[in-house]
Amino acid sequence: MSKEKVKIDKSLLDKVRKYAKLSGYSSVEEFISHLLEKEMAKIEEADSEEEIKKKLKGLGYIS
Image (cartoon, rainbow, N blue to C red; front, side, top):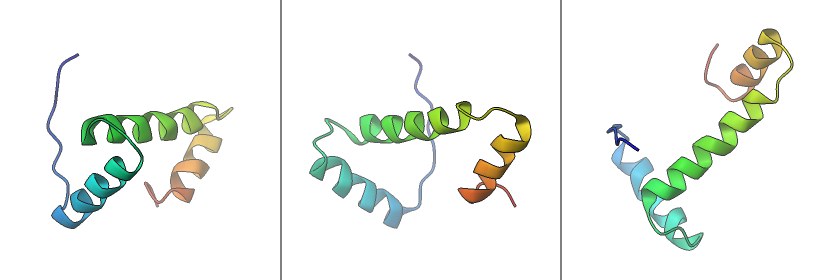
């Protein structure tokens, strides 16, 4: 698996570190990967492109 870098605001990263540790993840990367996989699974469950757009709007990713 190749690794890519993503920039995250410091205050958000501090929260991520805190919650990753509290949740028992072995690393911040593992925690973030798990969160992203869960969110993508929700989107993939959508039946149509229109439903996907609604879910993305609801999550605040698109307007």
